[in-house]
Image (tube, rainbow, N blue to C red; front, side):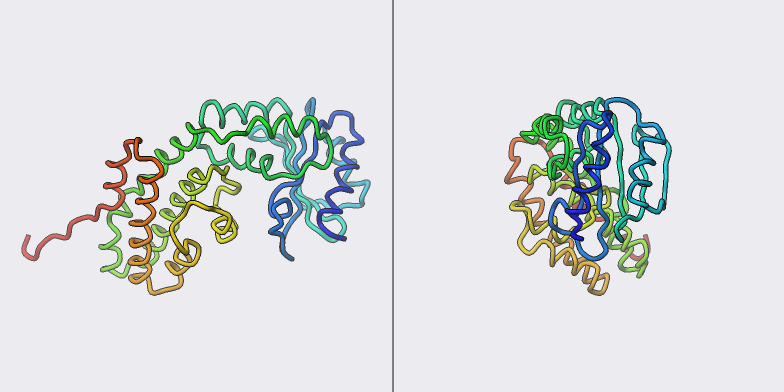
Length: 280
């Protein structure tokens, strides 16, 4: 059975509970990115708190095998289980909680990635049940807030002291730490690119990097290939590739936001710790 069909069947089971206001599918399946390793991610919003029975009965109805089951934490209930030969990942929220998160993102311009991931699940999600509630949530996320774009850039344009120490790490052949720096910098670059493209971040670790970049209009040329090569080449050459990429990347940031004062952060991000001269 196709993942979308499985999701539809499960949504109907959950919707039998009158406390459920909407069910939608998110993740790779909703984006058409799913492969043989993909889970089915279902999101539910509830009028009132789901009891254990509310969560367990749908699983039992399809003879599901529970893999993980988590109590309420960080304003979410979650579980995973096997059903129809596929792993199901369930995230449950109160409708009021999701509305609050949307306000955090769109009004308070929260750069919190967990908030954005929930927003992304809605903006790119496919509603299976409860269209009226889902449409209201989705409409609350458009247009992409200009204040959030600015907040994302301010949050991520400073790459930190380890990046400024990159040449020392390369000269010392301190490859483990240098690769950690590569990861940190690329995550910050991805966060800014999502903002420049007015798209909510869909995963805190930027899963599906290549597919995400392929969908972006605002980015350096051959962005996915160049960022991959940073890790595939010798680290010293990977560093050179990343520095060249960042020159172009920062040019794009300036071009799209010439009135915003990011020059100090941009200069700081490309600075290199000076090497002491022999004898000093």
